Image (cartoon, rainbow, N blue to C red; front, side, top):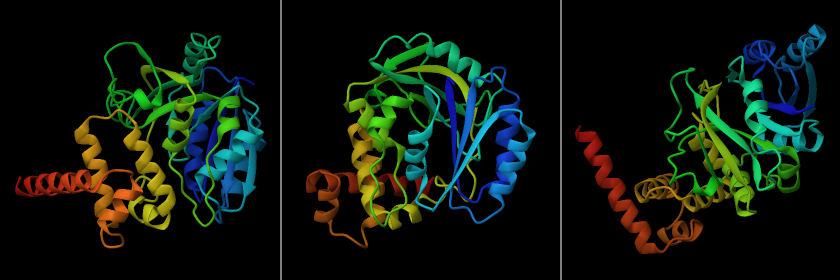
Length: 291
């Protein structure tokens, strides 16, 4: 089995058929679909069992107590059979040639151990990209170097399973969220890079009950993980203005709960840099409101 398409899901039974249909349309079926149900209380299990009865693609379904997406990924890494680990969220889909393209492009790095895997663009459609990208066919760099190469926004990373399996996400007691940037950056720090391809293979649908839309309440309920995420974002070589926005947004969320000193210590910057970022953020906010 070359690829494990991995889907962590929580009370998303009503969405899974759309993803399932996109997997049935794949021009190459050298993959397994591994679903970790992170404690759903809806009809997810029955829906997935109906897919399994269809017997059209290889599907494995595992139920675990609710612990968050990162714990579901850790479990998936333990049992994945594919050489490559491809996370596809329950509210998203793949274009029909996605698996074929992954297998084709992976050949270019397969024999080079310094590559942790490959990545593609995500899109709101097959023509409208999420975030930004470079102009060439592909780019080789680590996740920490993506800023200078204009690799911005959510991407569709496919990693070698054995590399992720030996690193995994940290798990914090009492918290059920951990940004994927924490794992991706650790892979980079261990010397691995990705080959980023300038093609859309993954179609996103950011829904109202998802992590992206509800991020503020998620961050407040997972303060340690949020702090880790911000520190990792600041490690990436984003432009200064982007880092100022990251710092200002962290301050806005926590200003009523933490002092300036606590906030500066959280994200490992001095108080003067924090105050400067706040001033710039406030001025930019006022300018936007006037427009």
